[in-house]
Length: 115
Image (cartoon, rainbow, N blue to C red; front, side):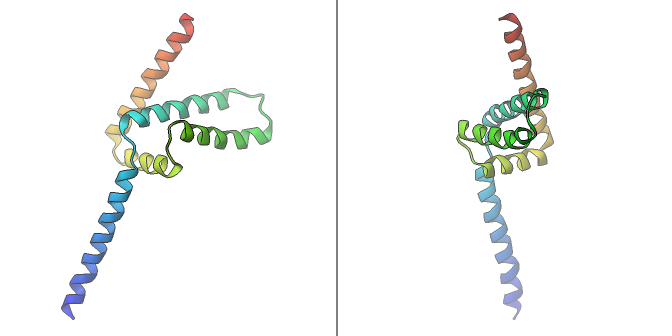
């Protein structure tokens, strides 16, 4: 009887650990995540600044943009979602990601102004 009380928590611990390992494999490395977040930011900025879009386009374009970003970067929505969750739990790393995205946007602005 007492063995059952030991086996159940052990089983739960193992299953939780396996789930965490699976999710950890889905987390994208920082460099790749920066590239993706840059693409997301640029598409979000375009959509928010483009006031000529029809009502239907306003709702459907973000979905299309995200699909295109995932395809371009060869990732799945699940990988993106798990990576966002991971980095949101680790705020110092998330700040580094967004600081890097901001620097790249500034660089792109400078390139655009000089051309």
